[in-house]
Amino acid sequence: MRRPAAYVRSGVARRLEDLERRVPQWRAWVALLEEIEAGLDASAGNVTLEGPPRVADSAPAAPLLDGQTVRVDLEALSELLARLLKAAGREAPVHAAARSLKRYQPGGETVRRLIEAAICHDEPTMTAAAEADRVDPAALATVVRLVAVPPLATCAARLAGRIPEPWSCGYCPVCGSWPLLAELRGVERERVLRCGRCGTAWRAQWLRCTYCGETRHRQLGALGAAEALESRKAETCVTCRRYLKSIAALTPLRHLDLLLTDLETVELDVAAHERGYGRPPASGYRVTCRVAPA
Image (cartoon, rainbow, N blue to C red; front, side, top):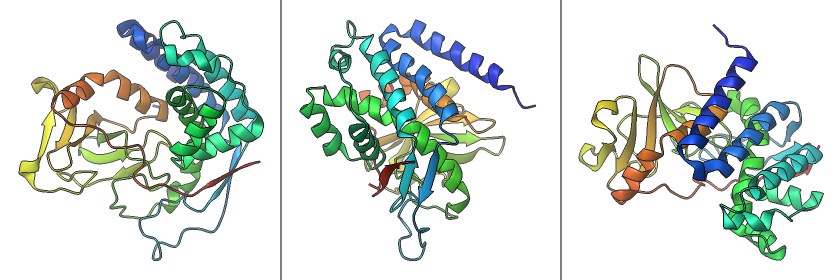
């Protein structure tokens, strides 16, 4: 049975409240996710794509956004960025890096360049923009990456039918990001990788490292509570020292649920880091993409 939107939103609100209660230090992050929930709903009709379709034979590993122009409602995204900066700035007493965001008011062209840099994993451009306006680079990059989530989600929905089958790369076939987590979906336990930036889902091989392709069983492992390994764990690879969280799900997770689930399973991150495993940089493939006003 399909649940009404109000029911879904109330469920998300309860989870956000629970997260903030469990870990008060996440208050700033929870405030940002609340704004992104509204942004995801508002962006659906405000994004268009321009560019030739990718030719699979000529660039089989290139994500679908590579070479595209993404036209966005720049005014709406500027307003979303302003709300996120305000939400982050409210937490300045707790998060010192957020203090510099309280006074930051970028113009439309700066917003366009920042969103383009976030979509293209262009860290130097975001860092240069932050330093030019004396804003904390890491804090600004975190906020701008979230602003890029709604347009990326719309792009992913429109490109879903063009994803090559099979897609053998570990990174997202739409935007090039590494997956946020793996879903073990349904009673068949199909392994499906999920992108946290655009929400794309793609099937993946069991017993294969997402990052380096390792398939030797003795190099692959899992971390987590013994009684919960079937439902949530951190899949590890000794070869590349990376890990990926794996979560059982009867049905596909909604985009915001992916981000919430990532926060709710932080104990898996802690267990992996304590044993010397880490997540890779955000980009598995750095796309070349242009952002322009609609």
